[in-house]
Image (cartoon, rainbow, N blue to C red):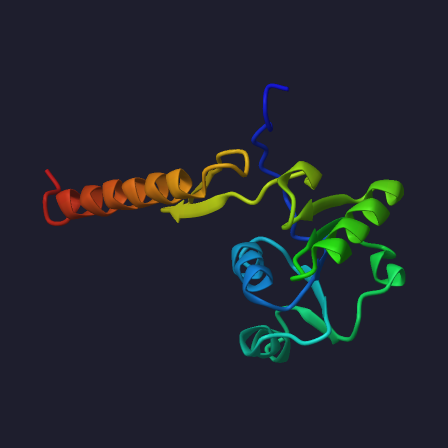
Length: 160
């Protein structure tokens, strides 16, 4: 396989389900929030920041165990629990239902990967290494941030 095709899509109206309420789920939520308007989180117990986001109306939180009925009407699902078996079950259910799924426990069981997202002056950049080299992605993001920050400093007060 040649790898994953980078694609930018409008997800403002896409119904996205995140199963899990811990650190990985929170990272995914933070990445999605500027772009997605219909996020639901199902978790036995969600971290405090996810609860706060729900209280602010930025997402819907259901603190209860996941059931297959939670998939009804969803268009994309992120399986972000700390239980590999449950993430695999969610993956299988999504595949049978034609729902795009990202399984945080197994990069082989992902229809899409989460990029590191950098936004600068209206330009959105997604950085990804096929789920394999997170360190390289982080280094690349830091290099791009440094480039953009340096470029802004060069432009400050130097209008000719």
